[in-house]
Image 1: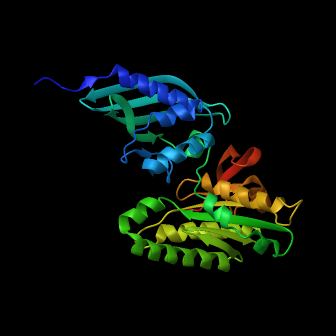
Image 2: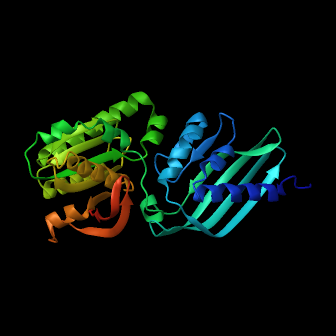
Image 3: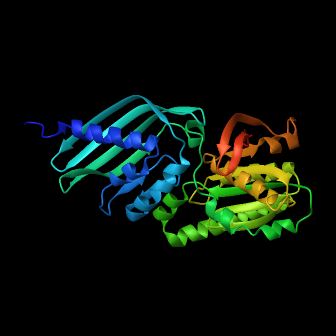
Length: 324
């Protein structure tokens, strides 16, 4: 029987045009190649990168602005079509000059014909390592929590150095869709109660929770690291389903106002560090690591120098080991 599936030079050219426009941040070209169907879907490599329909069409331009411009090397495209449906696989070595990150990248595309024009109806964006290792940028999971923080609450705490910790649940959207709203809300309440108990036990104070994320403050870096380790260990040994995994970020700094904006910098940096984490990770700033010294109590690894959204320059962060 004759194979009706044919290779498609036309789709290869469209894929090349799309990825080149993405790398150059030519947002109009990128979005104009999307299908007008409600079935339009984007699945990215980060935990929360799953968008559909109008949400994708209207929000994707802003997303592209957060991604560093990159250079495409050794690009390879294989595309096929049958009737009004087509698909393609794009593989390339991608390099981001701003972050000096390089990775072997892979994207799959699904196309449909709309008014005799091929348009993208699904994208699955994939790389074999976490975003921090791959392209040096973070996702937007903590933005809502940052907006909800009542700064006056922390400014009334004792003056001096404090360590700020952010936590959130990895893969939360997928888990919530799987188990339903009722069970998910119960799981989140149980999780937040356990997180707050560890914060209180180690001398910290919960400042804010929103959804499944938390922000807390500690009088010492040591107490913040102990709380983070304890939270991860309890999640690792938890018997109650769904089994949850967390990302935790910590930064230490002076919580007093300095020309009205110093406090915000401390909080923002802690949140941005948390958003660089993979599931089950704790990452801390260089300032936090320096505060606890190099004794045997804490072990750090995987040092990385990264840009953090909204903060100037490059920032050194470390992974705090907790599986002992």
